[in-house]
Image 1 (cartoon, rainbow, N blue to C red):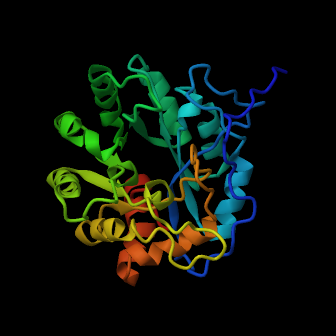
Image 2 (cartoon, one colour):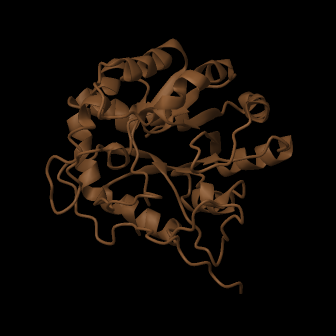
Length: 306
């Protein structure tokens, strides 16, 4: 057995004992953004990865799912695994119909490989434009991928930072699939929610077939407070941004835990408190049901009963 690579220095492991949420998730809730890492001994990390995480396999993910009261999950390929989707596909299959996957593939992916992924439960591909995580995201190759997955009814998940949207939005608009934006496009929450940068993002969403994950306040927050030690109002600086997106696009928003929270450096949040964050951005029962149940079911399990 190959020797396991040591974790990236300073790596924060997932929270070992998340609290029980005070907010009770509605039946059928979907965690539309989570990951699995390895375990490394079974699913080695990609040689070209930018980080080496802790193990965070399907067994730990499913325990957290059940602890939080989540019904289904969407498992997004982690960049530490590159385009080897084995760990993600293994987790999706092990969920017995209660999971879908979002893959990372190369432009030369074959129709047969895509059909195999579809049969396993994959329904989208992820394009990563965050420079610290990928060396380059050549647009011609990504367009080729989008054209190959469009006939399957898949969507493209976009991970980018808000400052880069002006250079990317024409390319995004040219893609022949629905788009799903990770983490609200990573806005700078120190700027006004009604300022030009976030307003541009909202116009981009409104102009196309674009869905938005109102996820990762722990990743976006500049002033906190952190979701730790029973804090009842974490990430207050992110709340106005999440609430604005939910209010403007109630039928195209998604929520997820982002477990096991890769590449956080300041703190590792309590996942139970992240559930309690939900009613602060989705303030009515109707908004919460759309965010947590109706919208992800429509995107990932169309036509299926909850």
